[in-house]
Image (tube, rainbow, N blue to C red; front, side, top):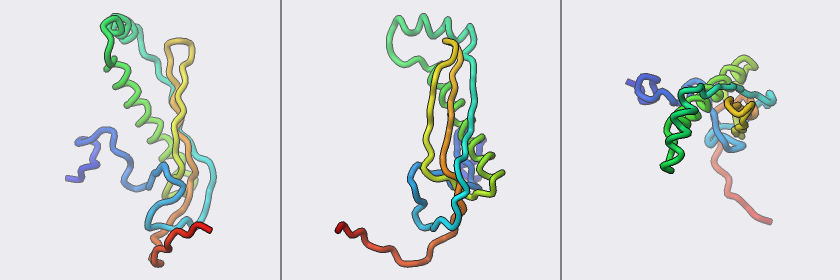
Length: 132
């Protein structure tokens, strides 16, 4: 079984698209820059979660209801970014980042963004970094 299988890890990244926070993909060369890509989702916490979190906040510590919600929402935004990048013809996304904001006091917006690119394996020898 593939360890990135959703049944093993529901927050695993896609296996058919490289997604990295760096502006490059090690071992690959960018052959085409397609442009900006994104995935956006807005989720409501719900009344029950808000009440539970309110009482949990009195005791201090992590509010796991919100942590779990944000993990899920961030993953969904990443999957939407991947779908958008694929629809543009990309096989990788570089320089990804996330932006999160609150809307209306009970909704959370999560935006995943990056640059959609086409990469291919780079077989040329690695070059040392030279500072001039």
